[in-house]
Length: 121
Image 1: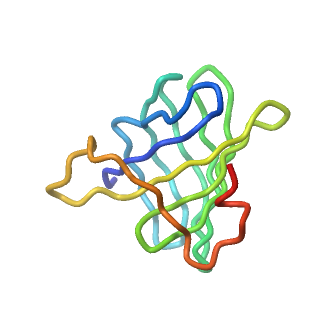
Image 2: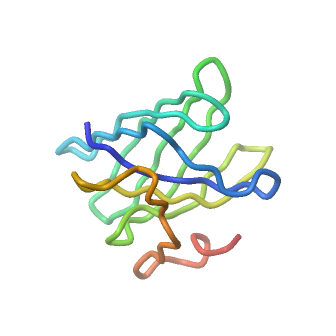
Image 3: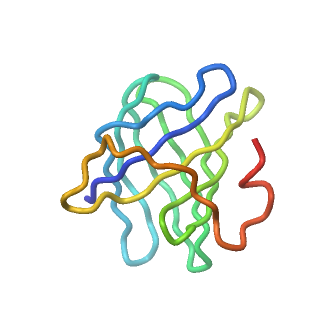
C-alpha cells in the first residue's frame, strides 16, 4: 500500500486532514485502504476508472459511511464527498513521494477538464 495525504471540507468543521492514509490501486482499478481523521478510523473501498474518475466509499469503523466521487487532476484526486440526506463538501487526495512528509498539505487541485460540480463549494 502506498502512503497518501488528503483533506475534506465541511461548512461547519472547515478543512480536516486525513492521517496515516494508505491506498492501494490494483491493476484492475480496485482501490482499498484506510486511515483516520477527526471523526475516527476509516476504510476506503472503490474503483478507479480508465477515464480518470474515481468512486470511493469511506466507512468509519462502527459508524456511518461517506461517498466520494472525484477526478484525477494529474496531481491527485479532487472531488465531492456526500453523506446522503445530511451534507456534502469537497475533498482532495494525492500520493506521497518517498521523501515527502504527510504534513505537506495539499493546496487547491484543479481537475483537468472537470465539470463545475468538482469546483463548487
